[in-house]
Image (cartoon, chains in turn red, blue):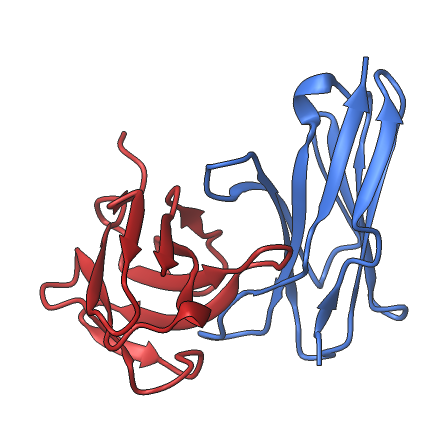
Length: 114
Length: 112
């Protein structure tokens, strides 16, 4: 079946602009995660949803970052007043449950803030 | 402070030989460990996992070993193939709903 889908695959924006990144998880997966990967680093946790609610948002770097999952399926990561330091690959992952199921990642959105 | 450490940024191995990738962790609450493989422009792909109640898990050419007392795990690939060339990430989590914590990755190059 289809894997995790992320759109757009690439996004270039100017400093100060607002961006939205979309994630379509694997059908039936209740847990959804957002990670951010900078050059030379491993993926860093941002936020985790169980169903519609954010179960853990401790990884969001500041209040410019926000994510929603209104119907428990598709999720949108929103970044306000983008800064050059926000440039990274934003990865979405989903899993069947949140306990011992491995995460299945999408191909990511490469965000470049100029 | 990095909770999951992969101290070798890169590793080069000849085709047919064994590749050994290492990972250390500091958080004693971690009880589930995974290895992911990543090709350029793709997301990480799950490879193999191990629970803290085991010390070895094998899947085809891939074996993960866990040494809890040393807080160390390793991934063995044998025999190595050119298609195994990728970045390998070690990841760990605690029980319950804690998120996966990743290492920085090791770039494996398998030379034909």
